[in-house]
Length: 205
Figure (tube, rainbow, N blue to C red):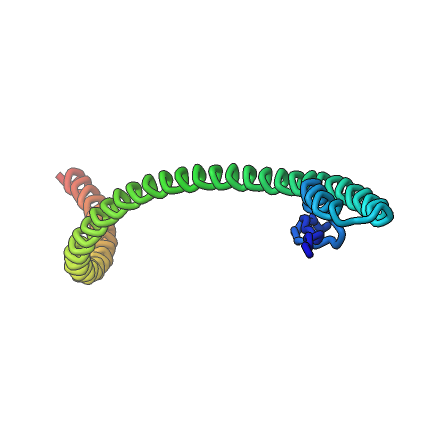
């Protein structure tokens, strides 16, 4: 006795785009198996059995055609799914290429920024040295300012003393001017008296 396998497998693409393998009973692997079974069976079958087997062969061939139809539809769905995945891969590769290009540009900018940062650090170092020098000079100037401030305070004090002396001398000068005015008046009076006396003397002569 010979047995011929009639269980077959085909792919199914689900709605979530996942692929699974499904087996189908009474789904022959091909016409060659049916032909082999027919050739082996025809030798020992009666006419009645042969007719019944022919019907089985017809059913098997119909199942095979249905299998081929299902397989073609499945293949189409698989191809469509693979095409979608291929497009997704192409898109991902394009995005990856764009990202690589962007990363290259970013790296170039980083290189430029690093160079600029080094130059800025050099400038900062120079400015720091200048600032230290200026701080030292500023300390020296502050000391000079302190000395000059002390001298200025001393001069202001001396000036105040001189102003006081000037005020005293001014008062004395005013007093002397007043005395001088009085003396001038007296002198004028004496001159007038002298003129009168001279006239009297002339008259006596």
